[in-house]
Length: 407
Image (cartoon, rainbow, N blue to C red; front, side, top):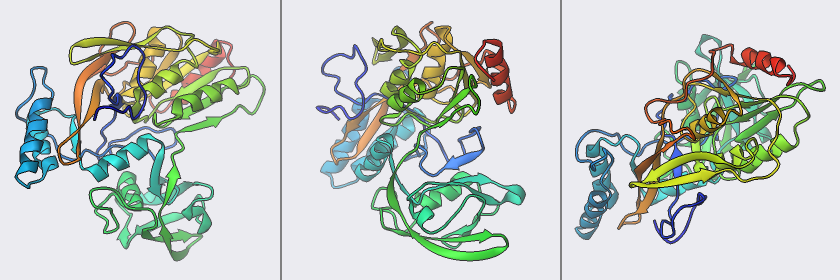
């Protein structure tokens, strides 16, 4: 997909490579884990692979062969067959687990998610006792809010299908119309205005309501400020969609004196440029990561500016992926933060999109990135300085207190 840069061009990228650089996550249903509160936000920037990866033809480095993918799509289109299906077959046989093929509609939905938009009703859900699904938050001025849905309500069914004994991520997919809904657009997710029927329970009383999905903005950054002077500010980043990096910088600029906890647990990745922008809130210039694109080495640098000097702890876990790992690794290698939690996912490959003959898009692996010290992330992840599972927050508070950054 040449000629137009869809997201962020990293510094020092060569001319002629006018492509989207994405270090994005691929999550199957239920794969996300370890968010701060156990919630699953309806607008999380999750990528569902268009096809299941198998084994077969690959390039010399084990990734899908770009020329083979493009040739297969062109030949299929000429014979009146599905170019996207032919390309997907080549990707599937390659064994490249991160490359995928989107129809034009699917790619437009994905692009909107990376731009910070999604179609839904405005609910956050969590797993409750006895396998119940409970509303944890409601987005203001959303279809759910206008219908009077409130935190604490039990969500019993979506479009007549019970939520009991189902993963929260599966229920969220139903709310958004990503689970085989008849309201889906051809080749993509549900369209704005399509209905979804909910059955809810509050204080023992059941009620049914039909909502109409709307296009909403993803809330990828949330900030919890300390109750007392000198306390700890927590900045939670769900994913690196368009604008996330500047949101992080603004949260840091407006934080009161004291320590900062950057919570990247469950971060599903996203745009490289946004992670680099976020890094500049804590690093006053310097190297953030290196990466290769088909053998050519590139580098990413933080802008110089007003980086905070406040003590910093970064929380990570097995759900921290790709661009989230890039940021955590940079702050760790540069000695800027104490990383606390459990080892991260280990997705360090770089994908770029290429438009195929029938308008579909193949997003293929073109290389891998490394932390400033040269550590590879793919298949390895980032190891925390201080191991912690469910006690990560309390460990962060102890570290901040020891560094003079509040508690």
